[in-house]
Length: 215
Image 1: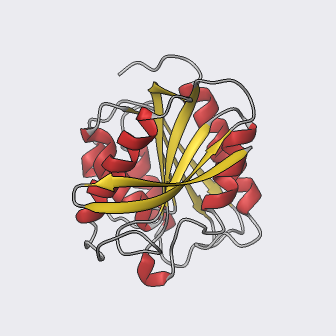
Image 2: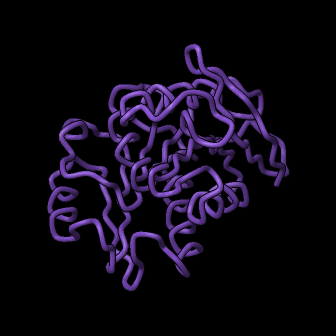
Image 3: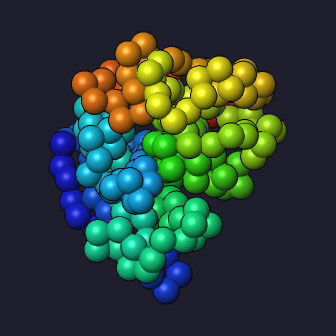
């Protein structure tokens, strides 16, 4: 795989990211991967985010992981989840412009806080053809009630912060195509389970983005 550090605009701010490309000829499907809350040390080189990007590249899918505003070398300050939605839209726009990426096959993946932001963005952005949420730090799926594109929700069975019962109930109420997976033994931080969650996320995007997705 080929990793390249990049900078891209988000309004008046400049955000930093890393594009990971497969070692093959594109154009490839592409996935934007969003990190967990910076208040808990979340950033683009997180132990869950990096393995996902690497696994995607091995499956011939490009990715962009990036630091939200105020994190690392990304300009600005924490936006209470509101400004971060603009960051995700800007990341999608940047990934979509790359010559190696097929702009018609773009996915979005968010972990914890990144999942909460992603589920707000996906239904409002027609470019997002599939959505994966990992241990999403949320209490409602209202934005996804009418979202009929492929969705995957993955959570650890030992998650300390997410109510598994509530999450599963909410997930089951979403319109198809829709999948929920509970990984026994994994907690919110996925220590020791990074490879497993990366493989599951990758398999989802292989299925969702390799073929044209109906809206």
